[in-house]
Structure formats: C-alpha cells, structure tokens
Length: 168
Image (cartoon, rainbow, N blue to C red; front, side):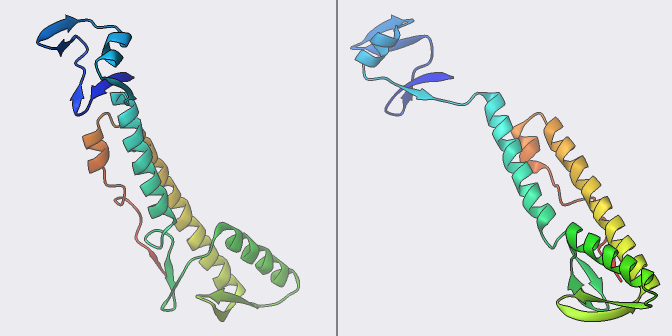
C-alpha cells in the first residue's frame, strides 16, 4: 500500500495544505513537489499475517525445546530424536533376532542396559508421547491460522494442552 509522508505528517488521502491553501486530491507530482515522500506501508492483512508468522515461529521454537521434547528415565532427563528412536528400534530388532535378551541405550549420555521387552515399551511410550505433542502443535498452528486480529494472535497461549512429560 502506497502512502506519502512529510516528516511525521502522513498524507490523509484527501488533501494537503500548502501555504494556507488546501489542495484536494493532489497528484503524486504535487505531493512530491511539496516535500512528501512515498513510503510503503503494510495492509491490515499483512500486519495480521506478520503477527501470525511471528507467533508460529515462537511455537516452532517452543516445540523444539525441552519444554516439549523431554522425558525422565530412572531420574535422568533426556530426549530421543525420531532418528534415534528409529535406530534403537532397528537395534532392538537385531538383538532380538540374534537371541539376545538385553540392549544398551545411551540415556542422558549414559549407557544403560535394559531387557528387550522393557526397551520396546520405553520406545513405544516415547513415540506415543511424541505423537501426542505433535498433534497438539498441529492444533495450535491451525488455531493461530484461524485468528482474526493481532490482539488475538498476541494473546494466544500455545504452551497449553501438551501432555504431561513422561516419567519412565
């Protein structure tokens, strides 16, 4: 959206005053000749979208933080990324195929040996927790997209609704 300003004065879209004379519907040349400069301004829709984009970026940071991605296993706080979970599942399958009864995981950078059935349950619980947090984030993104004012966007609390962290 085009707008014209002269210092702190914004052209009102109807007239300017020059030497005590009111010029109605001045041309762009008249505005520029009288010290007005063209500035780009955002529309209300653009400002709302900018607010939504900022809120979504904040949500992404929160979603990647230990506020969401964290569980406690035997008193140790940690997280396993999707690729780590997949890798551990492959390792469990391999150990099981070889007739092994235990597997060693790195939990909070500490080696921890547990039996294979327990390891499967632990990974399943972590995966289901991750699935649940993902769905909460998806719902928050949809809710933010549906907001209709900057005030609503600014007031929206995306930290609510996440499941309790796992205690394993």
